[in-house]
Length: 309
Length: 253
Image (cartoon, rainbow over all chains, first blue to last red):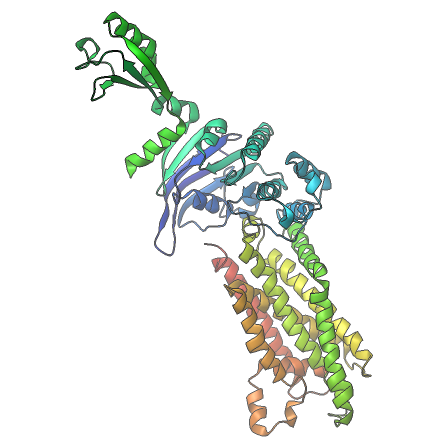
């Protein structure tokens, strides 16, 4: 099936000479949740800006559902909703008015029913007549999401949707994003909270210094690059790793009291921890403590970016 | 053409006027009334008629212009500068909205407000001085042209300004002095020849002249030159705005 969004050779060099995007190729599948991870200044916001019309690309093409954004910008933009990172709101406006305004701006006829539905889905209905400046930061964030959804877009960009948002609201937002996906909306989000990507995304892209260094199914990524680490505290110190265990991925601590076992999820299938423990038992090596740790997306991410640094 | 967007922007901008009713409608009307009290009634009674028109009536077109120019520039520049300042402009830039929709919305709303103000001032003037408009249709055309042109100019100013100070400086330091020196309160024919010649370099002279001709049928300079220059200014502003959108100057990175 044709991707709903296709970037090819997308690049952006700012007037200052800063190269924010270096020939990025990316295809977003219809209906998926795609998480774009990257450190600050990696080019996440520039990438979103280029698709949404806020940044003029220096090179490359952007196609929304097969149509070039440069040629057919009206049609393309009408299908995209954007929730920016900054809490930019019209402070003196009422919530319901500002959402209705957004709908009109994106070329849709007035429809109070849609505005009501959007506001209710974000628990903003009770605040519909409040001025935006009276709302808390979390509520303002919801208003921005409501504005982005007012014209019922097919593609929703969320730039750091949960930055500075409390835990409860973050949970609510995840539920909402899940519900949007159920409704067929394709979602592209950038985030610092890797647990967010881990929780929700179908696929993950890692961007660093303007280059997309990895795009992968979340599960596959965790399986390939995620590591399981076990620290085995020995009852009696060992002088060296026994010959019989030479081909196992093991490391012995300086004092000989701790064995560290590290495998990727794929390797773990052949040489799992239970088998290792059985071997140790067979060799008469006793242990007193066992501490296991499965690496998260965060570890993988930090690892990837550090390797390039 | 995205008509829903035009309507959304237009209504949004007018709602802003409505919210600040005192500042946007009552203040200019009060100011103009004060001019009428001072120049029209208090001093005007002791002044000679100018080209057959009583002084109080003579200054009406100039006073209307004074308000229209400053209000048009202020409203249109603020209308586009505010979203730039707060960051809400992201929405306009990411929307399926082009030059035409933006101008019809922002400039249309600002011009509407200016024309409403001009009408209120005209009605207010009735309470102070009697007057008769010779070419009402031309007066309407001139007012419309001037309001739209200066709203466009204000829009450009709002795109250019990178601080509230710059937003204030041009109207206060450039437009207001030019308006006062542009024959608002006098006919440039009353000036010594050298100053009259210098005045002809002031574009506001032609606007005042055009509007005054449509009111009283008398003109300091040829009315066709007035109309032509006003039109030229309008076209120039449209050109600059189109360029701003094409190039993304100060709007897109």
